[in-house]
Image (cartoon, rainbow, N blue to C red; front, side):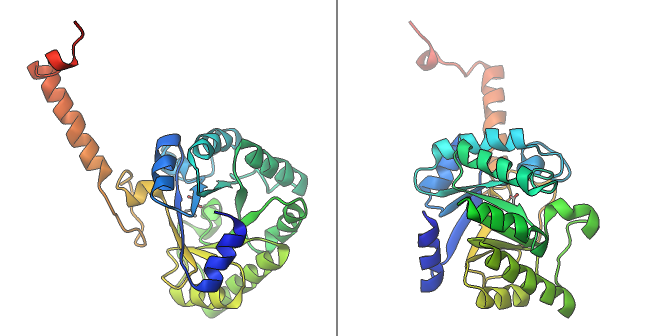
Length: 262
Ligand code: KIV
């Protein structure tokens, strides 16, 4: 999957599919299932590391996970998510850290913010580092938002979202994630900009959709946002299998002669 192909999909009205993954086996599954984009999201701070939000995640950790995912992805585009404080301090910092994602195997980076990060997006685009922007409910702004709350609910906020979307497009972003915003606002943005919009909790009118793998496969149940649809219950399946293993070890049924050397 390439950026020109993503533009073509938007132009032809074909939906773009994106899913997070954080390691080799799950990235391989996403790739084999035909995802267009695999996002190595900083959501790994919550669903893999067990933090309450994404703020503690470091560049070192993100590069470690990006390498694993990049080694698994044969067709999907790999996007590395820039963690908190890897691009906020200076444009120089942002360029260096974004470059490290590409060295680790990503084809693009994602960063949160609208007009406030337009300068950085322009600089990265000048050096051919493709940027996916992310506006609306931006998890790195959890403290400003007072929690993970839907954004853009009133007219003025919706207008600000639209101007942010236009700002990141103008700055050179190749796509933009719209998270946690009313579907009407997402539809208006999608119709108003030429780059693909990828929605998560933004309704069905975006050019594509993204979910966190651990949410949609039922591997994370500390909280489940309203916008998540669960397509499997891997946690239940895994606990069942582990319990069976425990029972068989305790009863002496495992290992049998079949699993023994002679
Ligand atoms: O970190 C992440 O997984 C994300 C997606 C939810 C868009 O930013």
